[in-house]
Length: 310
Image 1 (tube, rainbow, N blue to C red):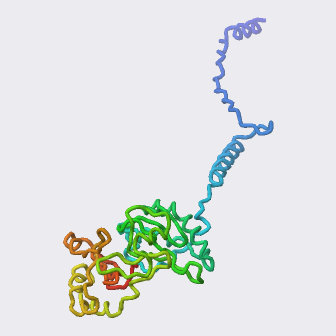
Image 2: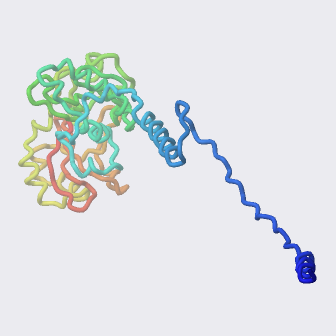
Image 3: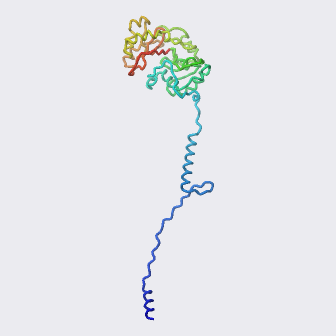
């Protein structure tokens, strides 16, 4: 009996174990997933869906229809040849005469639309006008294969498509060396004010102009003989200035001079340009022809050439 009581006493005296609170666990934050037609998506599926929607958005932006340019049907995937241009000057963006500004734009357009159909020349040039103006050319009119453009001579109607309507047309700069102080309404009006077609200009006067295809006055000059004499000199402004005084060249073309520009319809020599260190690379002939005779003027590797400008 005493043993039973001793056992009870020990049980009563045993300390009651202290209950420790369970550590509080952070409850996961529930993130509302995007739903599509009432279906709950997993995290990964939501990421994929969001990515797809972003891709769809950008695809829609990139594939939005763009306003087509009227010039687009005429564009060429490759550079088109230009007639009467110096490649070095064409490649030099600082050479910004009207002729070369036009050439840099024109070389990006094909001429197949005017093969056998001269009337379509005007459509092609009209489509090009915004880009010609953006490049810095002041184009104020189009008529057939000509553009009316402001040059150092005034406003000229320049024939820029050789052989429009023929089987093998080409880009050119068919300046006839005559301009008017203000734009003219038609090619005929311009021709009447500048002397008409087929008339040779007196020495120092403007080259002939007219509504027909331009007379390329440079072709009336014996380029082979001129170049034969020029090659005795260095192909630079100094050499050209010396060459025009060569007795043999003056015997061929009395009064031949370097070309510095025109003032009041009269040509003047390039002595002032030479004194200022500017390029001198053109000759002015008694018939009014202006010919660029130095390829790559002012650059290393410059050489004599024959590139009539009218």
